[in-house]
Length: 413
Ligand SMILES: Nc1nc2c(ncn2[C@@H]2O[C@H](COP(=O)(O)OP(=O)(O)OP(=O)(O)O)[C@@H](O)[C@H]2O)c(=O)[nH]1
Ligand SMILES: [Mg+2]
Image (cartoon, rainbow, N blue to C red; front, side, top):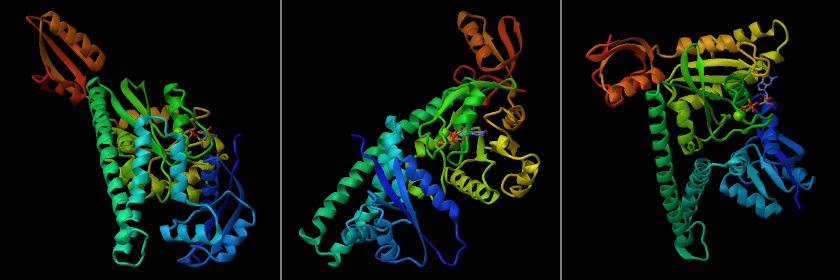
């Protein structure tokens, strides 16, 4: 019943650049995560073929394995998809669509599903628009003249995009309100971010005792998970997030904005990297992660964690730290599996959080005032309380806790 999915992977590399074996390896990981059994890998070093992306001979070689699909690392234009499909009767996918396929099958929440849909629509829209423009110029005559079909399809896509965007905007607003309330409750929001498969979820479980799924494959996590814990006396909410990957189109990041706002709106970002990757790959993944953080408009401080330190040979750690110094000047070496370095990491987190501010405020000596006081015991660090005509409270708190309605008369010391 469960039909096996098979694929051959193809990659065209620019002959001017040095060969890059990691890309094919990553593509294999993606294909396997999408449920394909990979029958073969076909590589070609040449300039781009406008009709088929690669040479005809290489496509024929790939098809000799009789795969269900050809999966290209390189992005395929709509014309190339059309040409390969019709010329070779083959089904094709490029890396971006492969990632979308994984996301579609993993998306379990309404938010994730909407984001995947928006990404798909954002991918389709310019292609339909392009086809429409060609028809209007009379370069691609169709059975319905002047592109009426594309016109209505484009119209439908735009309409659907607007509806999905507005639903996502609601989700995003709810997320913003939730974060605001959490800050009022005295929490600092810390997000785990980083390249896919770096160990973010394992680290989340090690730090908070959560039971988030962790697997040796890309994009295990799509939706964020948040758990509370205390770090050196500070109340912290730690959020696990979707991983990054090289060469992501900007519109994919835009489609995932509501999920990624857990990172862009955090008080502190923990950037997780896999220290056991070869240094060159580690550098590349760190650079890709920095770019993604930039795309997410992160303004919070960033702590880089070199995870999976347990896999490093004795003495190798110092070398690696040196090799990435320009990308991460003060990384924390850690292992989510053995717990190594997690104490140092906690110290680092507490040092990088904005210190709490000291305030003095008075509350009415009434039931309402007392109930506010008991709430402050939960949300702030109380330094002294004197019970006079009024309750005079000195405390350390986040500015959001104090800004909450009712405490606006507080004096910052
Ligand atoms: N040896 C070792 N393995 C680790 C460590 N941390 C994570 N792993 C393994 O690395 C793999 C990926 O871990 P995840 O926690 O799923 O990684 P992730 O960053 O959440 O990945 P995605 O959600 O897919 O982006 C799993 O097989 C983990 O068991 C570590 O410190 N040491
Ligand atoms: Mg994960």
